[in-house]
Length: 147
Image (cartoon, rainbow, N blue to C red; front, top):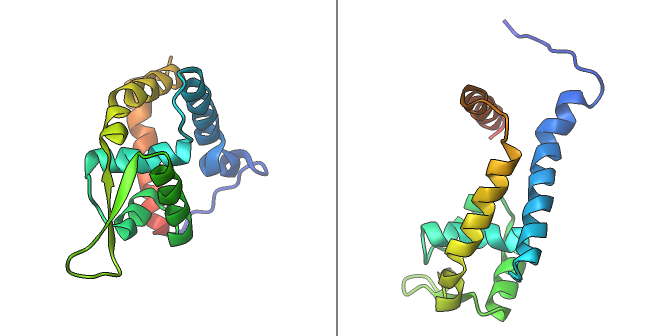
């Protein structure tokens, strides 16, 4: 049985499509700037995935960050200019580049992750843990329905 839900125009849609996400990203960017971290949120999201798995391919970064190839190419170009990452061609396939953190890129991890954690904690003040879990489950279902 298919259920059709009716919402006031934009009520749920605007929230799911980024109202909360945008507010968190703006606050995080403001805190990065205040801490003199010369990073955009987009650059930080790439670094975040490299901190988890250094040396992944540019295509894997596209998949992990939900960005297209031109966007990742631009972000990696900028991160290279900032000396945070370096591209290394694959030994097996010269069409593939692996992206590695530099020492400087690795050095930003703890400070930026601490700021991100503080920002998320600030955003979730007053939200019970069970509601957070429900929200994660609902958004996972939405994602799974559309992937």
